[in-house]
Length: 203
Image 1 (cartoon, rainbow, N blue to C red):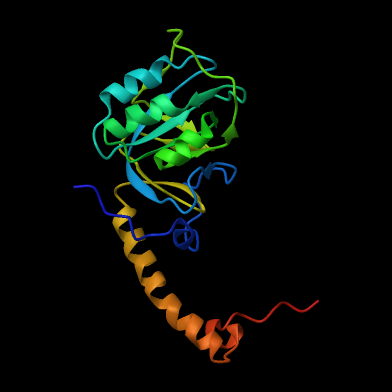
Image 2: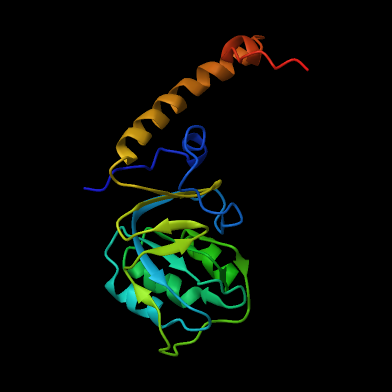
């Protein structure tokens, strides 16, 4: 059974992790959306959307699509039709190192999508190439099928399934402690008194 990360914030993990975070330019289309699941990777070159058609036909419920656009910064590979296909297959979400189109339809559907922005120029089914299930690069992070993807309003993180349980436990402890820290600040304590930072170096 896949580890449940639905209560974990990427920003909490960012307090103690550095690796695995995708380029912050990749942001969610749906405000405050959070999604997680094991990755199904797709390498999608240039203007050819063929591999996504295959991926969405093979996808299992709960998987999170991770789309490597191979550096393309012109064509949108995702829109209303692919959103409908993904939702019908039980897709957890999609992160695209590139662009989408049909923004209003994506928002109306409420399907969780993370991407670099929008473009009116779309990919086509050309059969030139691409791959489903191999190792890809998305937002500067190497991702393999089966890696755990956690995405929310702050960004996207890929986690090794072997280390994810320990990271999740540490994050939950931090999140549980945060309300007490805020209460103490509101009661008048200083942040330095609570966190006890080391002294700044002298010149």
